[in-house]
Length: 122
Image (cartoon, rainbow, N blue to C red; front, top):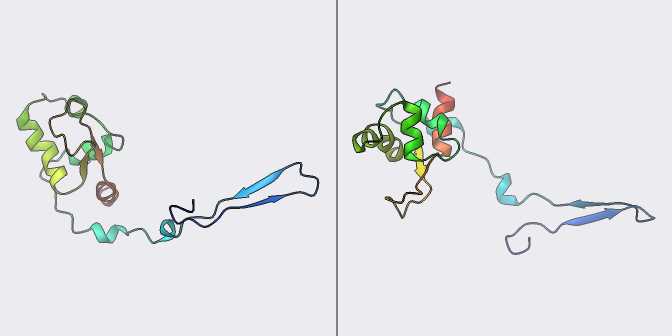
């Protein structure tokens, strides 16, 4: 805990040592304010009417094949360009392996900005 800058833990026990309580204080960085939705209001309108569907689906990382199957469309490069690329460009969707774009293990997940975008349109 000391290495990452967290406050020191402290321990409490009863007089006869039958139980103890460990208190792990919150890291100061965690207490910083989270950006409010209003900071994301400048997100561009997405061309795809299916964008919200994709963002909701990708709250847990999903493969391109899984996304296309959920949309009911073929796993064709044009569909990648039409549905997934705009979400990546506006930072609503991110890649699990950004350095390996062609990896068969590549998955896509909804970012914090994407979740804010979802919240705006619910």
